[in-house]
Length: 114
Length: 112
Image (tube, rainbow over the protein chains, first blue to last red):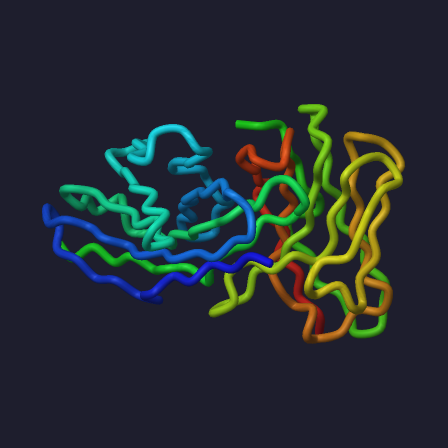
């Protein structure tokens, strides 16, 4: 079984300040982990992915995430928020072998204050 | 963008009527999924397919059925629509179980 917990349902930051969106996971296998972003009334776009290579993963638009196995975490960060980052973010785990399912966290809505 | 097209994009239907949503992909991906998105719940898996004619239930499959008669098409049917099935439905595809999923633009379904 696998699960994903996004620790904050809503995060609010000022433009130009750092962003931290937190994600913890559990998985019986070595997981693949993903962050997706969804802008209002849009589909989901892949930000970045971890698939057992480097633990620090860089994605699009300046986002990055660090896979920490000991903490079962995969937090998403960005040094400086931009207004266009306002969106909902989903942490997703895929257990790979033995599981056909992607499991989604419930999402974190990021607001950016000008 | 991966070639995933959902149709219709918007639909309003009456309680008790059957509804079919279509997902069409041009990427020859093996795995296909139907999710529903509701506020506070993220995306929840309805059904998935791991090949032509091979499908299985997800966590919220009651009231839904699916069919996949060819690689490129994955149909979701609401057998008798209820107001609780008002939601945004997303189709997704994957090439392999450890790869990223690609999503369609979603279908907003309202059951009145």
